[in-house]
Image 1 (cartoon, one colour):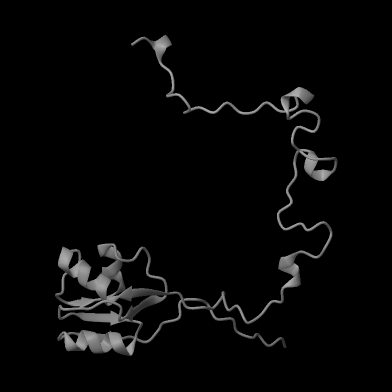
Image 2 (image 1 turned 90 degrees about the vertical axis):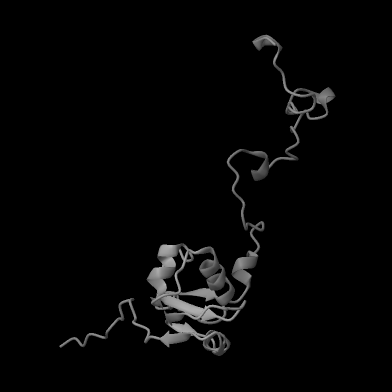
Amino acid sequence: MKLNEISDNPGAHYRAKRVGRGIGSGKGKTAARGGKGQTARSGVALNGFEGGQTPLHRRLPKRGFNNSMFRNDFKAVNLGHLQSALDSGKLKPEGTLDGAALVVCGMLRRLGDGVRLLAKGEIRTAITIEVAGASKAAIAAVESAGGKVILRANRAKKPKTEAVALA
């Protein structure tokens, strides 16, 4: 094999259709851009534009309340994932497991405002876990396996705005 003999497999490379090369090419005159106007020119960015009609994203009503500034960001941990981490040896059942231990073992990327324990899956190992919140089913499942769930008070990390009285 020589360098000048190397080629793609047949059909692997599609040569682009050359537009605007005469009426006989089938893509002449307007070069498949339709008639005149904004879309026939370059630099068109028409996302959401509806020809002067009020666009859909402005016609729809805004509903509800978005508390994004002070919302708590709890990370959900399912019992099944917890058991698989215990089985694989990433987590040790000794001592009290908390959010920092889950971050170290790789179950969570970051802690956020705390961990919420959910009951999806099953747990067979007796563990003591400290979380910011847990469902009733998750608490019952951990306690039936011989473990214990410690619910800690949620410590707000985000600054609360205080009304300042001007004198």
